[in-house]
Image 1 (tube, one colour):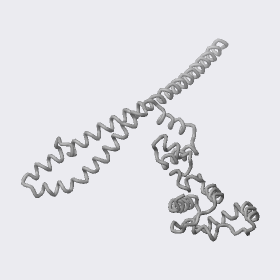
Image 2 (cartoon, helix red, strand yellow; image 1 turned 45 degrees about the vertical axis):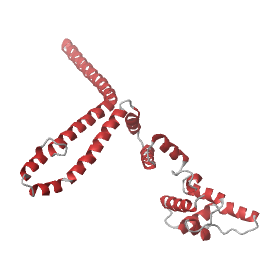
Image 3 (tube, rainbow, N blue to C red; image 1 turned 90 degrees about the horizontal axis):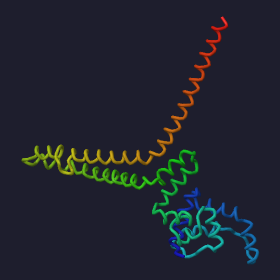
Image 4 (cartoon, rainbow, N blue to C red; image 1 turned 120 degrees about the vertical axis):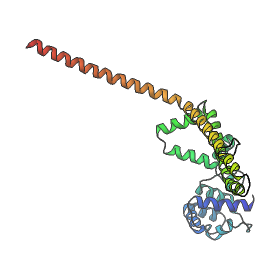
Length: 253
């Protein structure tokens, strides 16, 4: 086990778990596992002293001391991570997250964001995520999104070069012509061409987005039509009953 990795990870995990200081973590550790440690100390003929005096050395990469395996396991429990994360065998905090990251290629931050959404999820949130990630049209949507995002980055980079090009044009005999080309020219980095390229990419992305949610749109339209027919039938029934009452009233008169 690499001490530098171990020291860095327990320090990082401690802070992420909300323990602002080493002392606070060590104190809670002693309280939570007090009986367990007393029993182990008694078996070895020693006294229980906890980890307050030793913990600072665990986070010190220059110190060669390591806690015992059972202490590391207890620390992992408190820090909401797997023991293999603290020892450097996996890079994510748990095997579950590591497996998902390996399978999907997504970062742990993205996985955590999806999990956080799921925790407070309402029924339609779940349906939206299923449509977004599970539909056959999802691949085309992601490809269109990637194209838009990459274009966005490239166009911003191009716009960043404009001040230099404007200064160069001012110093050139053909400056006015160059500025006109920069504004309305057909080359890739002109404003006109970049606007056109962006509009095409956004149109394609909007079309792919509509296709992705076409299923839910049809489902909603069916529900709307069904409710509309129900209401119209109720209206027609009320009108018919009203006309019937009026007819009976006139007949009796």
